[in-house]
Image (cartoon, rainbow, N blue to C red; front, side):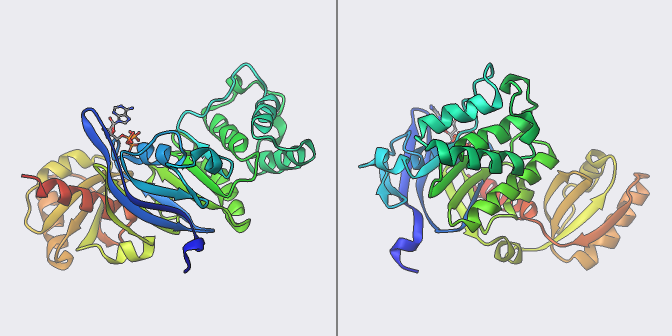
Length: 314
Ligand SMILES: Nc1ncnc2c1ncn2[C@@H]1O[C@H](COP(=O)(O)OP(=O)(O)OP(=O)(O)O)[C@@H](O)[C@H]1O
């Protein structure tokens, strides 16, 4: 790939606040037409990274190029090619859906002939075509987020930066969101999104895990899952906490986490451990539906990587 094929390039990007180094020497590149996910626990540095890439926060050291512009030297030039949707997108609650869209279309200087077609397309994809005259303040949380996306996308950017866009959004609206994002990819835009939902990381072409401002790893979801050091055992149960307490400290378990339907363990030698787990749980009289090896998810990998990192600390 040539240098021009990367629309976002970070090189040693660093930003400190008085109490913390929020982003610490971050380097990665995002190719044109790619959707790249930034994942990490709260405080990992995702928002700070996004803000620097959007040109609203200057780095201390390091550089970032977005859509061919150096973000330190020419953030204003770059902004014309970027759509940035921060966590709290500025909607006007006392204005209608249409009026909010018009406000942003004016702000971005979108010609009148284009804005109507684009707004109609985006609203249809967002499942919001019937709500054009509703006040933004009267929309559900998911709808507000989708309206934020529509407003952010009313102009045609080269790069889209989304900071946890689906936070608090219901599953149906999340699907709408991803459908819109994939449609944009087909049009050749580049998308960088942060997400707190690890299942969403699997929808990205590549993902990077941030932890305390540093990147722990970056690869395609498939490759990442192949790199897990161990196997994943799922214990399906309604009451995972007592089970977790019971088996905590058993040899061969490297991490445990509570998931939607019970517990996930990262283990060595699942063939040996699974029968042992079953008998220990049965002996304690705890009720579980199943104890089985499952394919690892991105979530398993991230929890394992973050726990390992914590364990390395003195
Ligand atoms: N304006 C600021 N002033 C001081 N500290 C800040 C500021 N912005 C962020 N931080 C700190 O920098 C670190 C990284 O925060 P950041 O918001 O980038 O993380 P994040 O991964 O986006 O997490 P979250 O999802 O909780 O926003 C945190 O320790 C945070 O408290």
